[in-house]
Image (cartoon, rainbow, N blue to C red; front, side):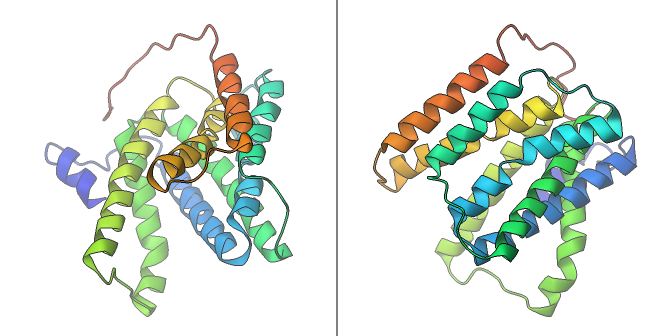
Length: 243
């Protein structure tokens, strides 16, 4: 939040957005989703947690339809293929305790609410304002637990890792918010599932992880789905970051 205010807040109040209830809904739902998934990671294998979490596009479609009357896309087949590709890459097996699996689904549900709110908020707000409210809600929710047990990075390497997370997350969130100016909650959620493919790619490049048949098969399924979902779509509209 501090970085965003330093870059974009020197000209005017960076929190002066529109439809504040949707901005706060996105912030609170996104923060709760993140916390739920982190809890799930501590309770069950990450592969299981992620496979359950990646049903969030379905929740995004559900809440967009119920709350905002957004029409459900007809490309449901490609949704199944996309989620199947993610499951193949993660070598999906439902392991671990029930609480961890429930927390993964809770995280997916809140992520669906957050995506629906992003789509609605993006109609009248720029991606910076949307992310600022996400940071604000996350800071408020995590403040008391942090104060009760403050923990800071213990080494220069840890600070480097945190800085990398902050930088890449900031760029990714702004691009994601901008992207929802051109697509619905359901389509946007499906495109976001491609992150599991990029995680696998970075693991191969930086961690020398092997190239497996699961990666090749699952990655192909995800890429084919993304191409099919975007066939014939040429976005046009306001590309401003702050308006």
